[in-house]
Image 1 (cartoon, rainbow, N blue to C red):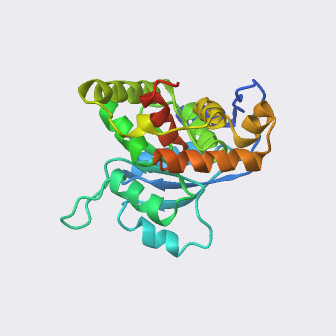
Image 2: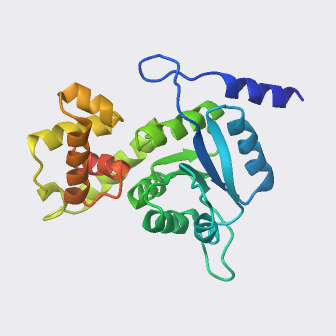
Length: 248
């Protein structure tokens, strides 16, 4: 009973945004893909204690998620996906497989990976694949909340652990082989360079527009150009790209 009260009190605390002001948001629709019943119910109870979060989709496996989503009248804004999921018969179907499927079928859904794995290469791989954030399962509820809000409003959540993983993984690749005619040969305009740096600082479109004295539409245009030029799947991929060029 005491544990339930503690979780609820954590959920009701209003987090501070980057300016130190209590954050307010429209209700964010959450999907949970987790095969462990107790963990799924626990995180659902914690997330539901925030009035601006609504858990409206659950699945115990990954291979049925795409079909289930096609039958939904409303899609989740953010999906929290366990990395280790049950196989589809004899075929493995992990969080990595589901991430790829979601990016192809429902590219507007933001993805946060929840995993017990704390390996640099593995974390960097998931971000490169298309995940918008990565959390280990020992993360505290407040960080999970902040990650959800961040990927929903900014398109990315990169904490210190994820940033270190990307940096280490990028450094290893760059020291083991020459990039040749790969990402380092992409030519960016000065404005694209400026916007890339601000994206890496997890600024929103409106914040970037205000800082550079341009319209949000112009920011979105430059962001789309950056995605195409760098071959990134989302803004998290742009962070990986920027790190490979030692711009962040």
